[in-house]
Amino acid sequence: MKPNDFKILVVDDEVDLADIMKDFLCLEGFDVLIANDGAQALDIVNKTKVHAIISDIRMPKMDGVELLKSVKKIHPDIHFILVSGYSDYSEDQVLKLGAEQLFAKPVEFERVNQAVKKVLKV
Image (cartoon, rainbow, N blue to C red):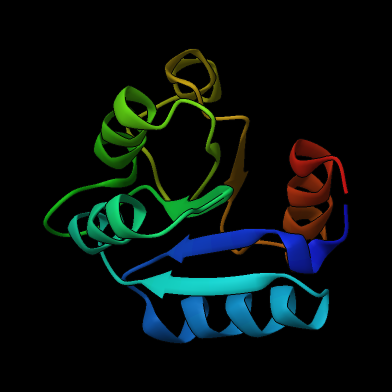
């Protein structure tokens, strides 16, 4: 399968960072949606087929770990990558909850791209 066969949801309350991540992944060929908090992301996931989520951990309304738990209950097949500048969770904790990777901010977009390609087997 090719990148354009997959829909990625980028979730971050830092609008500029979400836009940059979207632009980068679109250049790689992915179909990318953006949500600016976990609640908005959950709404999108419930209405649209999403293959992977790249989410910040610290956000208003619903943080990335709450989003991860909610998504995995209803869509266990969605791949999940977390990003955080500061987290109350260790990498081991988020991996046990179902995330496939945790990246620290400032994030290296190419590393995230490679992680997405790996989990989606592109």
